[in-house]
Image 1 (spheres, rainbow, N blue to C red):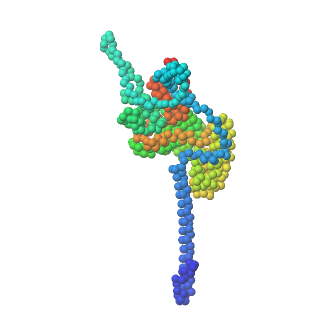
Image 2: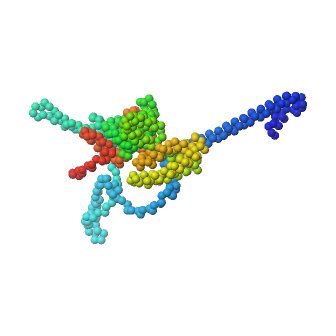
Image 3: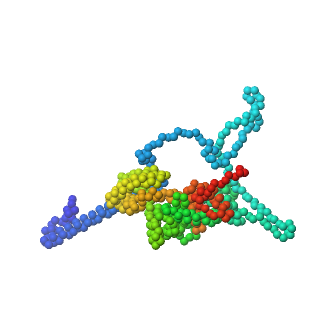
Amino acid sequence: MRQDEIIFAEVPLEKFDLLSREELIIFARGEQSLRIQMQKEVDRLRAHHEELKQKFFLMEDQLVVVKGKIFGKSSERSPAAEADDLTPKKKKAPKSRVQLPSERYPDATIIVRQVEFAALPNCNSCQREMKDSGMTEDSEFLTIIPQQYLIIRQQRHKYSCGSCHSCMKTAPAPPRITSGSSYSDEMAIDVSMAKYCDLIPVERYATIAKRAGIKDLPPQSLIELTHNLAVFAKPAYEMLKLEIQRSKVLHADETPHRMLEDATRQNWYLWGFSTLRACFFEIHGTRSGSVASSVLIDSNCEHLMSDVFSGYGKSVRDVNEARAGQSRIKIQNIYCNAHARRKFKEALDKFPDDAKFYMDSYREIYHLESEARGRQLDEIFALRSQMRKYFDAMKVRAMSDVAGFSSKSSIGKAMSYFLKNFDGFTLCLTNPELPIDNNSQERLLRSPVIGRKTWYGTHSERGAKTAAILFSLVESCKMNQVNPREYFKKLVQDLHFGKPAYTPSEFRDLPPKPPDPTG
């Protein structure tokens, strides 16, 4: 039954005979008005239904992205099957003989152990006593001597005058980071490297020492050792800043750092700046671009590689305004292609057909980049030039498709992000010395981030400065394939003797130590 039939059925038919023509017109108009109102309500409900469907779709899309971040693999590499068509399979090299430990670890000390019979054996044939032939059957194995904690009782000799007996002198104490401390410089270095290189919390360090027989080692005293070492090594830290400021290409990134006590704000930020040979961290209670400006203002930087964070854009604008009056080259922003690829990967689960094109394009781009690694600049430029067609194809595809997706959907966000920052993504194609992404800087933040999850944050601004200094020097050591423990040992010794500080890259370039003639 139609809606109009329902309305008329509610009015007895004999009533219409008593109505005048005017009353019938009024009745018909009322029925028509009601029908129009009902149609509007139906249209409104349909529109609301579509809106709810769209919201549900976007929320489902966001849920996929969040689940991927929480439960997905941390690696952003594509499955190996996807790369089969790019790189030919290499034949497995024939197995070589197993290396001896002395060949595998040439820097390890070798101890020769003689294994002999307690009593000379007898011959199985003639039963006579046998003698040593001088031949040996050699084998090797790796072992370890557990860490030992020793107490050094220092006795400084006193000297008196045998003639007038009016004067006494005491031999001077060897220089130490903290004079009169109950802990040696070696202990300060060991605790600091355990925390900032091996990412072992100080409380756990004390627990390990307890198992070695040193009970009740106070963690707070050990933390004080890290502060003292950081203050002592600060000249090298300041030289790191000067070293990165001399570079024309800088990487920058930041990550949250929690301040547990002693500060008005809990949410601080660890700012990182790096080159190919140096890494420099600062911790501040703000995410303002003024932090980056303070590093860039006195630098020779001409290209800043970062993500598309507005703070870096503001800092570059501020520095360029200052440089304009000095007739200096302006800084250009380079943007990280790994971030753009990451956004398309997040959209892959919900929009597989649309995101696959961009993922395939970036796969070809990074394949060319891997071929360019380690080559001459002209070869890098030639390979980078081949990337242009993939970037242009992605731009054309995104401009054509972006209007067909919600700006709040993952694929819509990825396309808009790519188009808006296209020039920054492709600037590396014009200069072979420019990086294609900011992955190197993100890797440098890995240890501070893992450490943040381990000890939750720092308890004071002093602790934050200590973390910035020691993480800067340790990560710079890793960049230069330098053992951080050896670097700090030599740095502390040289600073005690009044020698100038040096960075890990300068330590790597120091002439090798001559061999000890005494063996």
